[in-house]
Image (cartoon, rainbow, N blue to C red; front, top):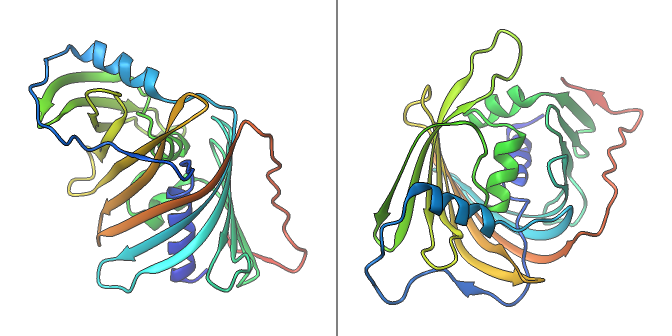
Length: 271
């Protein structure tokens, strides 16, 4: 599997879970005001209530990806999701023919490379090596939907940061397998003071200094009385900085879809 394909697959994984319809609104505050200090638990519960609930999601989007020192890459992604169960993606470059297919579950990663006629059946250790940081299904689903991570909180705090509420949580991530130690993760969430939607999310693993993931939720929209993200930017700070901008074209919610992953007989297994 060549390096460019690795890049496109991982960006499709990170960029394929938000919703888009034409109408939108900005989350930026135009008028500065003095915010009232609120306790952490109250802010946390308001944030949880702001997250939309659904069973199935189907979305089409455009992605602009740029790695430090490289030319930007643009491609389209069709994403299907069953909440807390599976994320399915079809990656289509400029030529309009599917180049790759990705299926993620809680404990497995499947990649189908139609350009190279090969496939990968592996675990999230594969994503760790490609992205140079630790990641799992819960993390991917949360950042794609504008949710916080629901791991046990070891320590927490809340304060006002500019025109937003800032929640800081030190969390314990369950071990990935037998004999693997649990890890600690610091999650920072900036909340809009009116809607309590996320404006910004920052994730950093305590054992991986100098590496973090930041997501900026610039705009939100309403669908069936619920608020969904509309535009976002993902910034990965690792060996080299990666910036991903996403625009969303069409979305269906709560309509069941299939998640096909058929491996042609002549394809070669890589992992």
